[in-house]
Image (cartoon, rainbow, N blue to C red; front, side):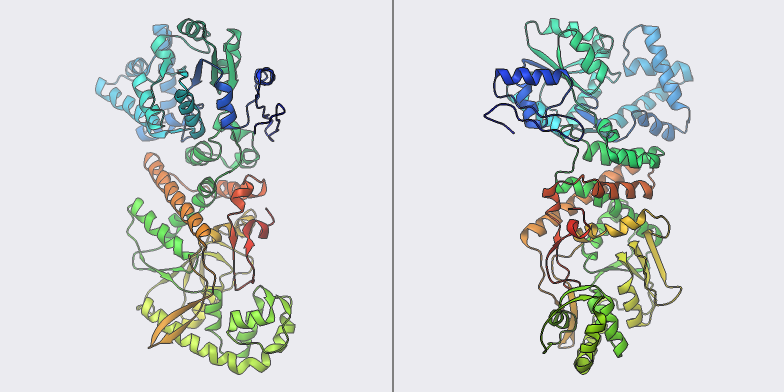
Length: 622
């Protein structure tokens, strides 16, 4: 934000301050704040501040780019697994130490592996293979810090001299490939310690750079408090320290709450996707400011693991029923997932149903009608009769709240019973016809329901309707799961009986339901037209804004699944449900989601209410 009066200040919860220079006087004040290590608030203001310098130097690793691993040594641990050598990390570090001692300079990867070869008594071909593995992994695992890409591009467009400096053993050819992959394509001068034998932390890099750019106003930006911030200042080079992705994460409540769940290499790779690539990728913000980032860190990990859960427990001969409306995108994601992971699919259909359609098709006696009053509904009694039963209520209208007012509404049902039974019978016939046409072999097949979960109402009603057991695979469940039989087969990825924290998972699952909605209204019932079942929906439909938002989220989730599948090829990953659940709940509870993102989550559920609501307001996190 720019101010005509002078400097505008804001304070982030992490302690960074915003100062916007509008004059020389203001710039002096900003310089004082920079001297204390305080970071300008936005990318635009950061660029504006750097524009006063002739030469801008950037550290590379954890400043311009980062890795899809949480700890730097994880690259060596991946190699250890691939090579079947549990001591590889120790040997690799020893080889680097010996090479430095022997050559008395800052060594490169060739020189390190030359020492490794002698240490392990390997042939040139063997050591070349291992060295290539490390180089390939470094390139494969690197990702850009996206806002920093924009900073560098803008400065180059201004005609500024931009240089990259790094204390690093990787060779220049490898680092150039990494920079190219991360979209740093414009020509910049590299100053690598293993090329010029000068290091930032050894203090000889800085006088060397000053000689390269005499009488130029220079500034250096990096993440290391000592080598990137404190040391160059001793040589009268201005510096700004920007936090690494890992540093931002470790300062956050997410780390404080999830640290105890971070155990192994698989967890580190998961954090690489969520922390380094997405949530804390930018040094200028620590909240989720885009729908894409929210879908990537919140929806995608859960849905990816749920699809793995389904594929692991179902067989090709099973009939998978992706229940409307959540199943609309779930089926798409399932089909994407099996292609990415080369899995033979089960036969699968998008199966039209709803609580209303399944419940009303099962009305056979008065008790079945009264059971409808156990479901949540907010509106008027006339709306309830019309929306749920397609019966016109003739008496004076009034507001109701179910199930609290069920005794009051129950009295009104008596006079309408004949109409209700007639309507329900026609809906039942049409629904059975739809099932016969959609799943012709339903009597012989193992029918598997795929759905978010909740209380199992639809599985209960379908079992009752067809008098056939279904198998249910759900994301989560409630405390009040309905079972048609005592031993009805229900499976939950996040079972609240397994862990108390999964209660929160169930509570916030409305955020998943929002994404997994079909782009048309809720199924009300079927009617027969020329003996063909025709679905009847309510009037709810996606407006263009919501349709585009949901499609954006779908594309992001597919991207996460691709990223995850690629990492899984590098190292076999396993689910850490407690870590995923911790991220899921903390992101919502600790207000990491910006208001603009929250405003995208409006929905209508005609079965339970008659007005549009916002998911974050429903879960009291708006």
